[in-house]
Image 1: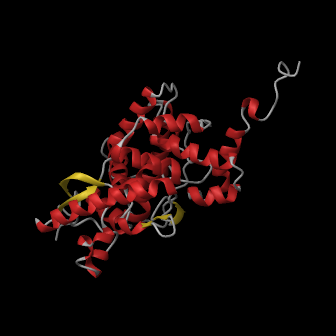
Image 2 (image 1 turned 60 degrees about the vertical axis):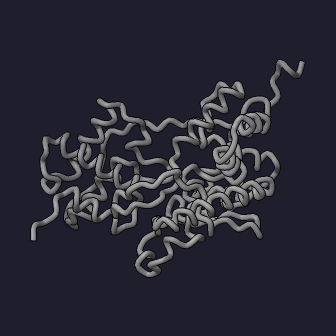
Image 3 (image 1 turned 180 degrees about the vertical axis):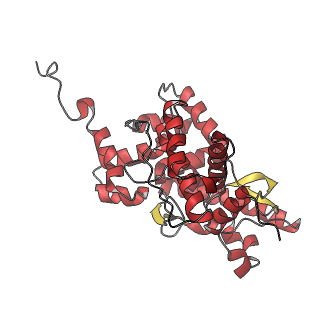
Length: 329
């Protein structure tokens, strides 16, 4: 039996670790670029010196954004370095290989998060409608990340306790956040429509969704059960790039991103408004309302409270903390 090609070995290792499809594509892309940069030399012939040269090239020659290849304070490994370390730790395993990397790194810019006022958030949401407005309400009202919102399943919504269970967020951790009372009614209406769509496709022989890990083997019919369906399904069926099974995926992030940008323009906002800005605004407004920073940390799912502390800096900006000497005259 022929040994799989290098990138196929990487792909198999990533899937054994249950990494997301986006991570798989990113890692394969960086490993491919690393090999091409070194004139198609095999990774088995290379190591830390070649990784250092490649990262230095990204930092100096290509001026790649810092988040692409530097290690942030929170110790999350960057995409390029993470991909190469994964290659040597899980594919070409050699305990004697020294992977200590001392490359020139691009400095990571420390930027204050963009935060909207409550009035600005209201204007943005007011210029949205339908399912996109419901998603945006969850980003701001529950503090969800974009992909956390899109990956919600029916069983994750608890109307009785008014809470949302966010599964496998960053760091493969689960957390609980609130379901806003003002969203509950529209969420029920939305899910009734999704259920009708699900039942229609079940009758046509479809209706299955992707299940995490090996649950489809343990529970062969679970992928067609209502509890496992996406809250925000895609409008059309598509072929799963891994299993090649035709089924319904969750909706794409692009329509919501476009809807929020359009609503921000209609609201007359001049700052760069993205879905993540609504999450920043959620955290800042909770702190403004007097909630404890530890509570906000748990709702956001931050591993380190230092990440949450950035919103206290937002609160202390400008005239919100210090009175100008010009105003004291």
